[in-house]
Amino acid sequence: MPPFRRLAFVVNPDKPGASELADELLEIAGRAGVKQTKLNKGRKLPRGYFKGCDAVCVVGGDGTLLGVVRAAARQGIPVIGVNRGSLGFLTTYSAEEAPVQFEALLGGDYRLAQRSMLDCKIGPGRRDAALNDVLIKNEVNSRLVRLEVFADGELVTDYFGDGIIFSTPTGSTAYNLAAGGPIVHPAAQVIAMTPICPHTLNNRTIIFRDTVKLRVVNRTEDARLLVAIDGQRNSVVTGNSIDIALSASRLALVQPRRYSHFAVMRSKLKWSGGLADKK
View 1 (cartoon, rainbow, N blue to C red):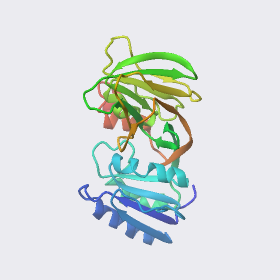
View 2 (view 1 turned 30 degrees about the vertical axis):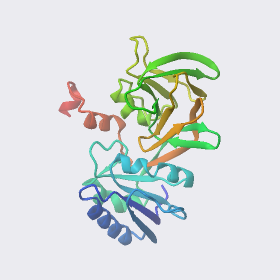
View 3 (view 1 turned 120 degrees about the horizontal axis):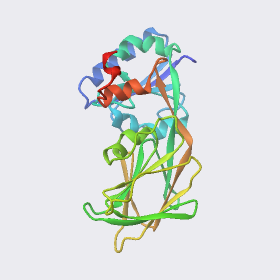
């Protein structure tokens, strides 16, 4: 793979050890022949921060990485995730692995995983993109919502409950999983729709194909909807509907050449009970 020679860093200083680890990686980058580096400590990025960069290295947790998704995808640059958080599904490299593998990685020893994103239209001129999920719920916490969902103009059903999660395969191990939704392989081109605490036993997750155009219509009396993008950005919907589809843009995640999705699942989710535990 092409080497990285112009590198941006985004560091979450609230994560223990993140700043020190970033400083160490910056030193390694200098020795590896990286011509240009820039460092941002904090989640708020300056406008155009990624312009002219080959990649961005995020040191923090998955939340820190989600904070750079829109800008990185818009600029078309890969994301190197180094975990200083808890689970770390998206931050591929552990704090122990990163210093050991960083020089080889910068030289081209990596692979790219192209991850699907969701495009969400909240209203006229109001669009956003999600790597993990789009949550739709009542603006007022603890209030129920009644929502109709249409797929390519056809009514799917109506939901009465706490809300609905629309998830990418990448986000299937996030809120979707906590709400009882399925784990979806990240290479699948689908959208998972999972109701949150529906007031019926018959509503379960529905998996939609990649080309589907979804519309959610608010049928709740005297209530406005709240849309949460990747758990990071909240918008109150003043209109009556929300449109969701797979985005034409994708996010490129940097991974080790021998990265194994199922090995990560076994480790992060503590899968056990089989021969895999003995290997």
